[in-house]
Image: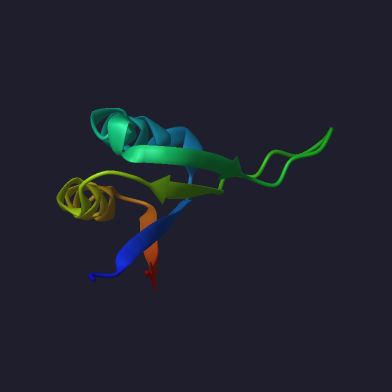
Length: 88
């Protein structure tokens, strides 16, 4: 029996105001492969961080997931990290 893989991607975006439109374009293109999307950034009444972090839980064919990762890595101001959990 082959092992199933659960893929979670972390996307750190610096200077969100300038780089998020390019990131959003990639995410929209691969929207059917994203099962869960969580956005995190530092914010309070007086401060909104210029940086942000997205956590993406992926679904569907891995080919699309890795294509998306490659496209995100090409966006200026973006760092991508991947966690792959293998289980039966």
